[in-house]
Length: 165
Image 1 (tube, rainbow, N blue to C red):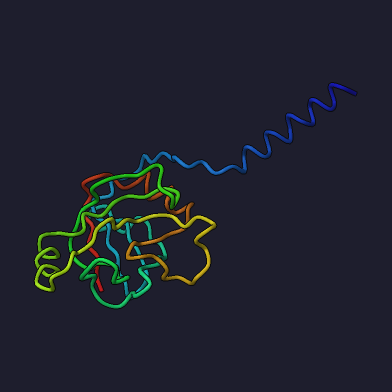
Image 2 (cartoon, rainbow, N blue to C red):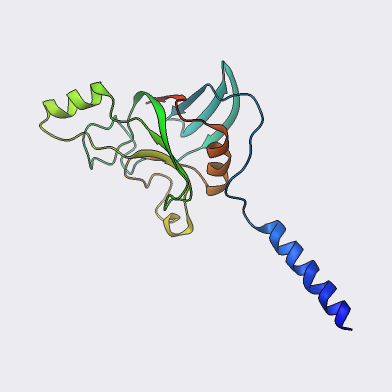
């Protein structure tokens, strides 16, 4: 009877550990050479040269139309950037940083007498942030936590990213 109980407990533990999310995944496929975001289509594309390897539905800043100009405007930037950092301890599950602001963004904000802001990321969407519709960030690009795990594994620091209107 005792061995049956132990066997049952081991089986339950094995089943539950198979359901647990693996935050850090491995990727051994073709190099991601470019990330493209089309804001109007709410899509993020991971490319190897000119071939799309993965496509994800995305959420944007809470004011999704238009280019980010200044800190606090709720818009997601548009333009050419690169992935410049990784945050494995993000409050948004995992995140990879976008090199916003670029020099053009800095000049545009300065002409308005304001700061361009910063800290624009591609990140997950933990349970606490799952209310409020698709476009809810302060200007970042959001995907599901599971999708973010894949993106985090696939995209390297230095990868170019183009964000289109």
